[in-house]
Length: 255
Image 1 (cartoon, rainbow, N blue to C red):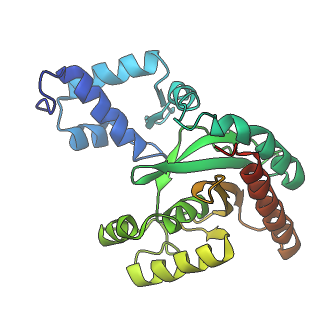
Image 2 (cartoon, rainbow, N blue to C red; image 1 turned 180 degrees about the vertical axis):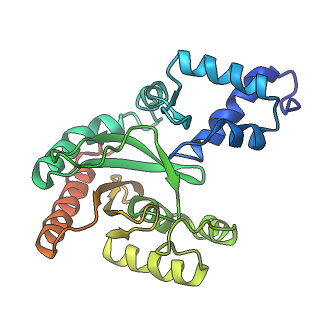
């Protein structure tokens, strides 16, 4: 792989390229796929992976699947904005209360380029609850928090996102621009988004928006959960997430 930065360091660029590939594959990828994607010799890929594994920037499952490791999440959780406050820190007590009300995990996501990135997350109380982690990123067109972020993009940026090829992750994924526009318009009207298996067919989610003191969209609070919740449970979670988003909005300092 040739250097893409003048006076750059090739091995660092190769490492960053590898991390970018892993970022796009939150469920993990094999070393064969990494070699094909990066166009690097197998020995180089192995050396980079071994170094990242040793420092917990990457993890490996028993069946040889590589994904981003806990050190990445730790770094992401410490990124501060130029707003004068730490949004993730403000969100954690709100997310904990939402988890206590619903029993489900809760997370806060923001836009990171063409991805939705989790900047704060708490685990659920149920034995089989999902385990969202800080630093994980998702495509903007699939998922409750992702679509909430997409819905509040400036019009020109939204159209650019819709003009790009969209991946269909499950039969529920909306990849047709007109259908997605209609869904996003409904999300803006209702200030509520739901995912009925768009990114993972066994996972549903709900999301609500967080705004700053000037009414500008900041982030999405969401609850991911396994399919099978009855109507009463879903209504309770919807009320909880809307209340949590409003609470966090009220906690944002008025600058």
